[in-house]
Length: 293
Image (cartoon, rainbow, N blue to C red; front, side, top):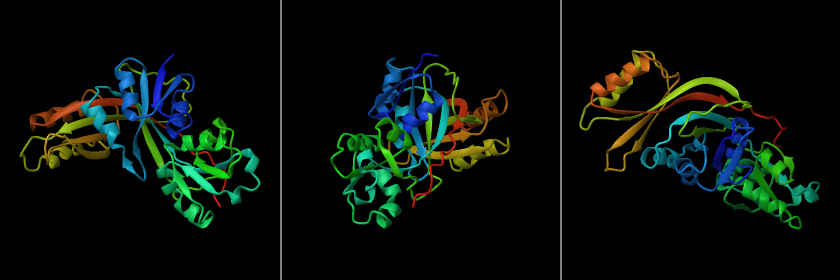
């Protein structure tokens, strides 16, 4: 389709991996922060942005939610969930003596996610944080004379010519990150390389002030219509203590009756409701590379 896709970079991050599956034929533009990605779409420098919104272990990515609500007006056009598989990789010159490495580099979250492996297999070896897992892989590739390793994904190993010497070293096997694609115009996901899970609709709801039982009434509007909510989360409005909005994910496409009826009921209660998007949901199947230890 000729899209330009801004993503949270650099190249070969987990966001890039997800973008490559969702937009395999499109131009991908790495940017260094989530606001930069969103601003690129708002300013017309990119057609869409793919950014992380939630992780199994870390929870919601607050900067994504806050920037979408407070700074830009960009609908959600799709989402993709990717498994987070961390691998230990070295320069090919050190593949045979990988156990003798002197330092490990990765993003702080990846280091924390591989604590058990580092403590058991590489006990006493310093682990140093860098800006991303891809940056760690790049650092290792550019310093072949040093006995160092990176923790990153398989895409980073391919991109920077490294050898995975210990695959799947993460502590938890069910770690996933959910990414959302946002754009001004509707997106077409032609040629995507992910499993289609169905449709979702996301709403932002602001409760009326000083209304006892308002949240219960909000949930009831969905409950009696048998609308399945996959997530509900509160975020501060940034207008004073105690002022919150709610993000609600509904496991169905925007229809002509049920969801509009729920919205009308909420507005009758004095709530403010904004549709953030009704979009397809995709998932990447985990690639098995072997045992961690």
